[in-house]
Image (cartoon, rainbow, N blue to C red):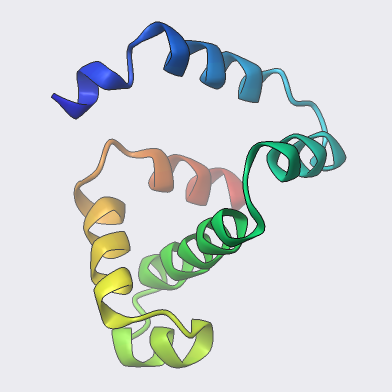
Length: 95
């Protein structure tokens, strides 16, 4: 069901808009206008968690490093290991 929602017209337009971003400054401007600060902070936190999950750091240490709850860490870890491959794609590109 959720996968179908990712394919609707509005989602496709959003993803196309994101792929048009060329620089870090472009991303900063677009995402700051698109998202609340709290949403950006949450995404940033999840990204830091994903990087540490990939490095096989313990959940307890990740929680200490990021301030994330173990529930958030568990959820992110699930998507790192069993998601659509988005985290792994970017983690590999960032190496």
